[in-house]
Length: 532
Image 1 (cartoon, one colour):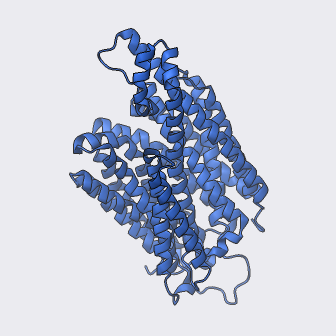
Image 2 (cartoon, helix red, strand yellow; image 1 turned 180 degrees about the vertical axis):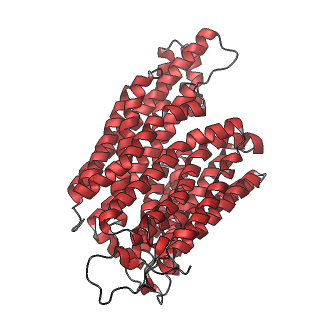
Image 3 (cartoon, one colour; image 1 turned 60 degrees about the vertical axis):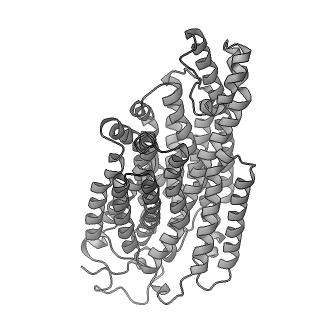
């Protein structure tokens, strides 16, 4: 059945000069926005699941393919760099040439590259296909929101975004459990092969129900190639500097040069976009305060979520000794809370606006962060689960509200670009969260490890020698050896665990302050959208 543009379905309520004719408007299953939501949920679930299962698979990949730690970093970083560099481009291509087309291309490419990773047989192949996976993910993700923006009327768009956020949260949260089960009982390749049946189902269902939508007014416009190059180079440099900052040091020449060059290129990109007739990213979008603040809050939301999940998994597995599956099960309150919070956040946003929902979500995340200050190296689970619930509620509410603030405040013709902007801020925030919080933990561990070891009963000369193992302790690993007596091993474990918790307390104190600042920014800067 031929596809037709549907942008007029989500336009404001101004009367059209002529009503759409039967042969220009989508009909039947392609006119049903809820079927569109189900279709994009398949692709979104696949990308979200893959994003969090890979961290579980990395140790097995390293053992099987004889990969170094640097190689394993590139398994993650190659995906992240390709994704961040191409997200806005993917949204622009969808707006210009057809959102359904580029969504389907993204799903197909992501599925094929996932299978190729499992078949690669070498760490170099895994890295290359992970980068391809990131590129196709960048075609897929922004067009999920672009398609929803085109087919849902404004009054129902907020609820659609809430369900979209719920799918994203659930898939990300399920990753450690699914990944742990597959790695433990099958093999690491199965972590990537699982995308094949999901991808095939997504392609079949989406081709059957998705309407085509595009910005038909842009058909004769010149494509902004210089803007593509400047934006991609700037984002690549910034994200590369961020992900390497933890290992190179945040004040090292390489880190500062990469981030500085990236910021300079992004400033040049912004200047250029104001002077080109048909920009890749229209700067006029940022005249809307809700959209601009929503972008900042999205980055902060994932700064907290991915950063906290990273060190929580280190705590549960390395300090407490749980298996990946056991650790995943213990974080289920976070997952379940985010499931509830996403549609709840959408409903609150629809009723009161993002000005209420975003600050509320940020305050809940602050409460979770400050609640983790009570954690110790041997805390009971009764102390752990309340912050998990508060964090899940806060993240889900902010995800729904900030997505609505960004995409809902963009014109329908720029829905894909707005979705790319949202996804880009999400990825950069997540990369910053993981790198910055681990750096804070590492710095605090380095400054307190020797004192904590001696305080636990480790002789001073031994404690000073073990200070060289601060990098391992920052990952939650106690530097014990077979030659130690049982008493000394126990003291080293106790002191190392306390040093690690010192680092965690510093990290959560920073996230708590940042989320409170985000709450104030959203409350003061966001105004209710007219006719919301």
